[in-house]
Image (tube, rainbow, N blue to C red):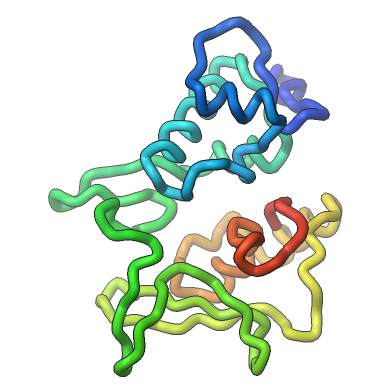
Length: 197
């Protein structure tokens, strides 16, 4: 076993050594708030900075994380690259200057992009409007309306991720991506668990 396998804690997040940390990370530590429960708006400068700081400390074996947070910082989330003069998130290909909640006109209606919502009338449990690489707005529906989101069980969440190959779901214009990442939007959708699928 390597050291990383011992870096998990009963707490959501804890410091393993003495080092300087930001006020934001200190707040999360003092209040036992996981990175998934991050107090900052997703993709804000403060959110990106906190994820980057946690990733750096974890890589230096100075931070213990729960399973979900360790998985989160193991991705490219919060990483930014410059492509054709525009800053792009690696895990969510939207330019930084565009607000994730940007309203976009489609067929004469305004839609909030990248903000999943419940669809009581079906045919699926949830829907989300996304912008395709071609620039048009697409409605993606996902989730079986006859089933509940039961990701609070670690075993069920692990099984779901394996069955649905969530580690391969990178395209935000597909139902699979949104199904695998539904817990990121749990508050807006009224879900109880923050455990990632």
